[in-house]
Amino acid sequence: MIPSASQVTAVLFRLIPTFVGGSWENRYMSKDVVQRSKNRFYFRDETLDFYVGWLLGYSQARGASPGAIFHCLNQIRRPTPQAWVDSFTRLLDAEQTAGNDDGMAPTIRAIHLRAASVAARAALNLSVPGSEQNLSLVRRMESCFQQALALDGVPVHAWEIPFGHHTLPAYVSDDVEQASTLVVVIGGGDTYREDLWYFGGQAALVDGYAALMVDLPGQGSAPDRGMCFSEDTLTGLDAAITAVRDLGFAGKTVLMGWSGGGFFTAKYVDVRRGRRMGGVNSDPGHGAGVRGGDAVNAA
Image (cartoon, rainbow, N blue to C red; front, side, top):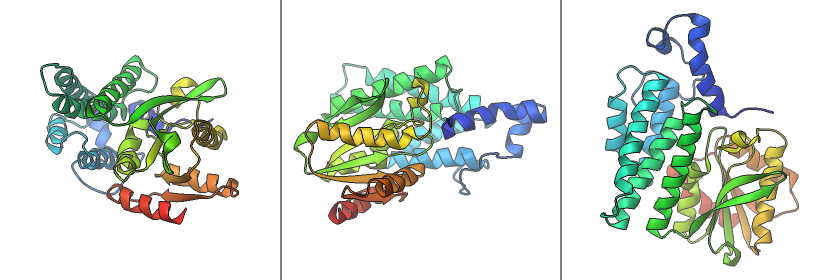
């Protein structure tokens, strides 16, 4: 079974000093062993810049504000994994505290809690997989995100989809059984179900479709539950789609895959040729609504 990309990244970042000698401060910037992107937003290191671009994309979809993100980045004097985690954990603490202030209006509290959820997600990128800090960040990210949904009155709820001896963590529209079209958002190697809200789940609801956002084996918190990348990843996708139909959904299904999720959706559609469905694979985030609409019309 294969660990997630975020697990590999976090472990590599912490093993490099063992192999090359010296401290992170002396060695970290010398080589990017993962090379996630060739863009330059803030850091010379391509992997960190990949994460910066990711967060700035969320800021355009009601995530943490650009100001909050750049404040965190400015606190990272030397770009080490721990400095990154510490900076975004401080933002998480501040935003979660503000979001839990009952004296604020619900809409304002939701803004703070969404920012807190994104801050926790950012810290997760470079926290040690399986550590107590890592697991705590997951719990706080989920709690803040779900509180924000409730305060905003978003008709989506958390759902644990039965899968063998485990369950797959997901979010699904409240009225999915009444929907005519379902958009299933599928992430890549290092996404959580909360990421999928920004990857297309939110856009689907705005356009009047039902949405399903699920962590398949290998994704999100699934590895912490003993489910890593394997043949079960596609089996898990089939289980999720079947579970929605068991709820009473009988309409069109559109699969929206991002990064590695593009591969999973293409493979799934190929294996399940008997089912009629549309697919969206690896499109820039700002085009999620447009591409999703194209796929719905084609399904």
